[in-house]
Image 1: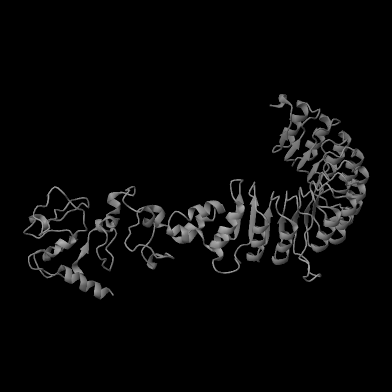
Image 2: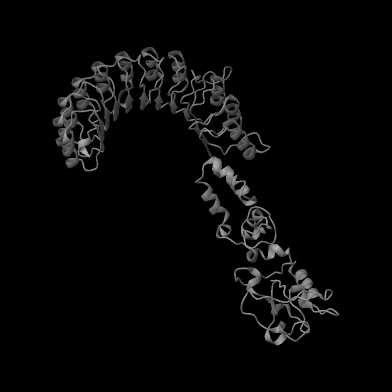
Length: 521
């Protein structure tokens, strides 16, 4: 190929009757321009070009063309040695050495792109970002003759893909419309293992349909998609969820918050087809009342779910909870916040089937009582996190059972349980010495309970005493003295003075104090 190109160049440079061969490269013959042999050190000079068939040419007009420089001994010779030819640095645009092959003359505007400027309205800006061959590491074919004129074009495909990996899915799809190169790189399968659709301005159904069309093409499935997060107001319907179940069989994480149109049938399809699903968050999906596999499949089959968040699923009842825990025995994190129809009868099924449960929240489940906590006590030391916030019917008796059986508890939230007193807190402190976070806001706790807590739980990091009217400076001082690793303390609406505040600042150097006393500022 290089030989044929050299032959073409020889033919173009061979003497022609009545003309000069340099005319084709932007130079006049010696007779037409006596300064043709002069060496120009600058790339910005102008060359007078006189076409032999147009004698009325205006000499005030100039063209910037590639310049051919000849060695000193060959300027007056009609025979040209290809090995002695070199193209000036102005031809390549960056002062790089001449390539080993010859490029045929291309479009004038494209060859002089740098001199016209990137903002020229007569040029297609999108094509400029394309390369011109596989030799530069590109995975696509674009226009053949383009100089790279901005620093971003010099980046390799791998680096651009790495930059794209920090963008959200919507922003990534916008980048794909910039140019052909971005369109190829932005749809790299490695960038779409995680899909995030956020904001109420995103049309969820349309976005899911477009993404799957681009990634799957003519195939039925997209095995590279592993996680899908639809949050912060983006809505989808059963139709999109059924499509995801059919085309994303390798899905492991699914989060669809606030999608009020989602029903049980679509969720059953996801559970049946996505065998590797481990994380499911359907917060605010008010029509969800059960999670199971489709009827007719193997009845002995169990789901692989380990994380399940059913917060604000107000349709969930005790019967549905029983089916869920029966089908998901591997659950370690279960959140039932504000599932107001759950009672003690449904809660008793949780320790019966989910023996590895580590975290459980039944906050705002107003029908949960001490009897429900008796059942949860069967989880034993496996349970590390428990929230019974605003369960008004929970008292000292229930918490004592939890403290005695779940002695490895790290976090307890009993905020708003007004029937909880010092008696339960003292028992809790002596049994659960590894406690790291405790919220007893609005409980009937005094300085005596805080002293026992401080002496028995020195590893306490977070403590909330909000609206505990019986707590004074003495109790806070005990906590500050014994729990010097305290990082967060909430004393809003408490009878704490500047003396107690200074004690916390003295002993707990890194503690963030939340308060409502303007005198502390």
